[in-house]
Structures are given as structure tokens and as C-alpha cells.
Image 1 (cartoon, helix red, strand yellow):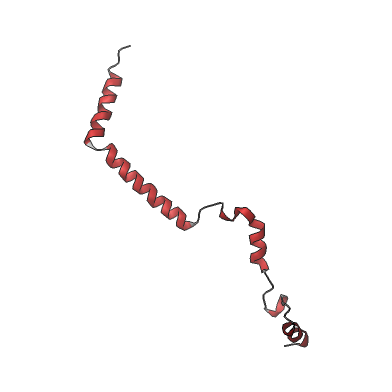
Image 2 (tube, rainbow, N blue to C red):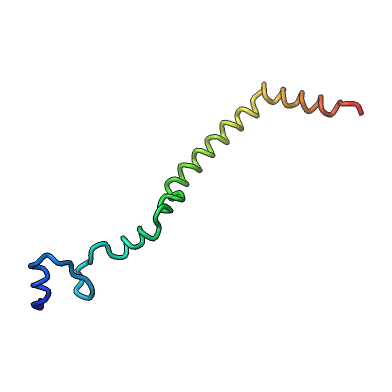
Length: 87
């Protein structure tokens, strides 16, 4: 190590540049600052997966309800009544 690196380390200074020691914050801190409030604006892949599973579950329940005997006969009755209207 060169003397200025030893001196900086001895006095607790942060080093950067080509010596391979990371400066305080670095690119990730600047990136977080640039993103600001938009950091939580979207969904992550895991949230998309959970949302997709929930939507599929809701669709399955809705399908079961709509194809049940009671709902099916009620829908058929409403359709027949609507088609039998005289003008």
C-alpha cells in the first residue's frame, strides 16, 4: 500500500476510485435518491405471482357459482323472460 492509503485508513477517511475500497453510498445510494418515492410504485415478481394466484382462485369460485344449478336456472329464467317480451 502506498503511504497516502495508509494515512487515509489511519485517520478513518473513506477511500474510493481505483483502490477498490467502496466510497460511502456509491452508485446504489445515488440510485435510491433518484428513485425517491417511486421506489414502491410497482409490483415485484412475487407480488405478481400472488396476484395471479388470487385471480385464478377468484375465477374458479366464480365459475363454480355461475355453473351451479340454482344460478344456472335463475340465469336461464331471466334470459327466457327477456326474450319473451312482446314489442
